[in-house]
Amino acid sequence: MTDRPVVELAGVSKTYGDVAALRDADLVIRRGELLAIVGPSGSGKSTMLNIMGTLDRPTKGTVRIDGHDAASLTDRELSALRAGTIGFVFQQFHLASGVPALDSVADGLLYSGRPRGERRRLAEKALRRVGLGHRLYHEPHQLSGGEKQRVAIARAVLGDPPLLLADEPTGALDSRSGAVVIELLHELHEAGTTVVVITHDRDIAATLPREVRVKDGRLEHDSGGAGTSTSLVPEEAVR
Ligand SMILES: Nc1ncnc2c1ncn2[C@@H]1O[C@H](COP(=O)(O)OP(=O)(O)O)[C@@H](O)[C@H]1O
Ligand SMILES: [Mg+2]
Image (cartoon, rainbow, N blue to C red; front, side, top):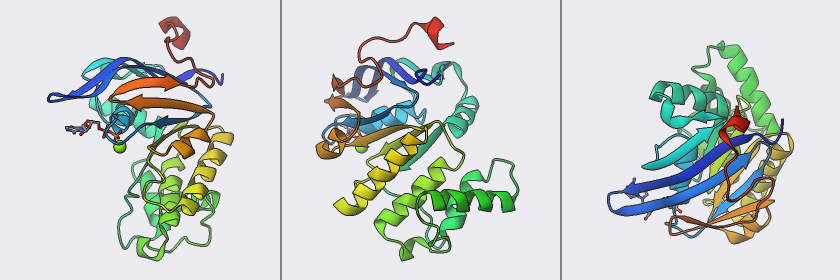
């Protein structure tokens, strides 16, 4: 089924001390969607992504990932769910200096139990997929910003997770490299990955099939896409 929810937030709030970073958010993201979460700096986008990605727990509300209620899982079970389901891409590429691209990507499978040769073979395939077959042995300082982000994307999609969460993936790039990265995210989406792009750039958001606008911690507008903006699917339908 392609329209099964992969992320469901119901009444999700997050407060940090007296800062309400996210207020009563309801959002359903279905398998196969490509959407933007857009809003000004400080509006709660990263907070929402961290909660969707189970990197952080909400103060209030329900988070379901691929049908699993995140609150009912231990930290260990959550890490396992995350490892099998979600790839992350961040504005800063998080590549270790001095490490060749092939190893940076292959290290994403370090705890997968796969032998080193196979990890490297899969890493090479992922790097070819993002158009970096000619940069396998380059270290971060030998790569452009756009290339670094493509290495980070190769690492994120290595295990073929159904869900890719990208937090300002073009935020550190010039507009041309940014366009290449967005194009790559479109390709991954066409190949079946559900892709969530967080951005403060309204022009980028406008090019994606669904746009969810966030302001002051609230979801202000949802252009809809394949999902519904207001109601959660009944629990029975998720199972
Ligand atoms: N760990 C934290 N501790 C305290 N305040 C935080 C923390 N993370 C985010 N905030 C605050 O929550 C609000 C939303 O932040 P964030 O989700 O990072 O916004 P965005 O990603 O849209 O720029 C901001 O006011 C920010 O300062
Ligand atoms: Mg942010």
